[in-house]
Image 1 (cartoon, rainbow, N blue to C red):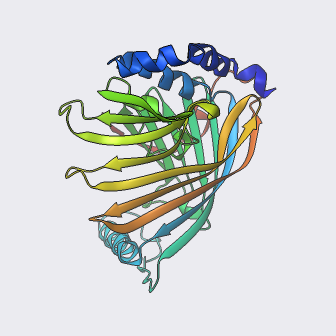
Image 2 (image 1 turned 180 degrees about the horizontal axis):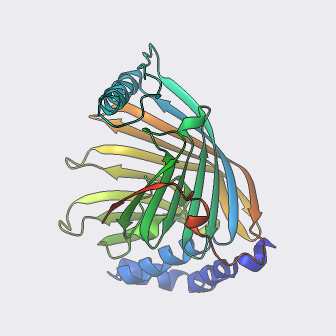
Length: 298
């Protein structure tokens, strides 16, 4: 069951078992120990499938800008010679209030690979995001020929916590391994982790609150922009234990532009199950049809 697949979680408990000595070492400029903790927390998610509901709320101003950009792009493609002419004209929507979209996301984790299937209300918006160490694949309908898929491949060494919904759930902080950082106890069971820029060690780029009672999951966080402004806030709540692991069943991310609300994601876990015991890998090519167009950004 879940317990069988998640033995790495026990390693976290053993590693943290040195208690005050561990925190004391962190406070004495030992970020490598913090990196080990972050890697252990992240690796605790494995051989799992998580189904979530995601509510996206977009500021009407930015939503209208995005729809106009889509219309311009599609119209320019339709005017190119040699392309399919049976694509329906795109008409930009006009929103007089914040745009709200509800979708369902199915996420699988296995041996450092992550498969994310997004199911949106409009069929053509559905797509698959697949991450394996060093590469990110995105599979969606080809905007020029709806009978085939477009696959983009990017070289990505570390997936961004903001780019992949799958790297939330109170984890995802191992992407900051190697960054200058500080971690200190702020009250009983709570620790503040501060991340600094690798190139400007006095520039704070993120801070998170970790709770030792929740397997050191983060419960809140803030990300900072070029001028030290907060451009994203993250909150995790409704923590529940599942197979000796702790998950926040509700996660909220709010993004800002120049201090103004831009968009927000509200994520709630619907179901957590183990992958079949005989499944030993996730293969992105199982999702790529034979007639797909593949674009590589290397």
